[in-house]
Image 1 (cartoon, one colour):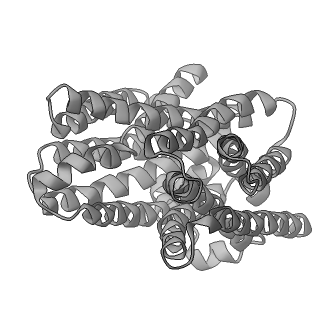
Image 2: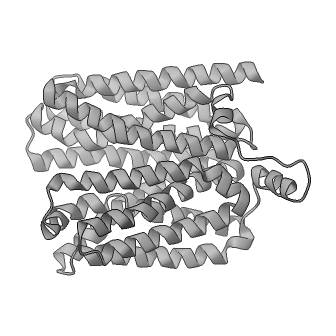
Image 3: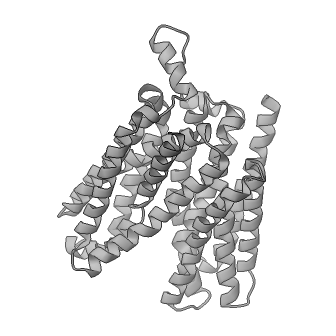
Length: 393
């Protein structure tokens, strides 16, 4: 039963990744159909991001009250309905409307599932869980591409993925008896039944936990680095390294290949190294990748640098999440992971556009410098968090 539930959780994370790259894949067709500027995709992205941040902040309250299984099932159902709504939309404002439940659903399932796996499964399972997300994020554009090239239209691409998520929702509801209650859920139930129990932590209480602010800044930095690399690698290669656009796109894809493949490999490495060692290893490899980008030796260094950055990023996210219960306590882990997720999405929203301004007004050649500064911030905050957690115990 434990393995069956883990398989369902893996499927849920593949499902979580499936729609992530759909908007970017379909937008060149969509914006022409809706007669809006190409930049308007940013509006949809921001609505989704804000919804995700809000639901991440509320994940502790929702999970304690309803349980991880129900929150996951309802969240996937919300995203499935939102994707179906995208598929029947015939105007830009309808896309914006359906982006609201999409963001709210995505944030809840992300935070709840990450906490559940951190509490009940090994670091290896956490690494492979995020590898599943990479598989979903890679497959989604292929499904959309098939819909577009087959003459079915972008609407059918969204509809096919919504159907897949509806099927997953059914499996999730059938699996509800398999989900164990977390410590936070048990404590909430005790309070509901007249016992001591515990209330969901407020943001003020979360920030007062030793090391909380540092790990949030570190998580902010990691996701800022990952998203900046994914959005700006191609532009850097074209505008600074002089590569052809098609070739640059292939090279930029090595970053995603590094993350997905790296998380698969990390699953095996976690059998020998603990979460802290894996994070240090990831930061070291990322630093090596950024350093290689500074070398003026043409295409080979660009290829190697992006691949190394992807490999380095691979263990950091899942290992920070998996170590949260050990660092901050099982009763506080859902609240901490929810806020970490929120800071992650804030990082992805703010920092790539900041580099866009730097590239526009100064030079795109500062891409490796920008990545280096974020990496240093991330590493310093992580080390400070470890020191504060150690002192508090």
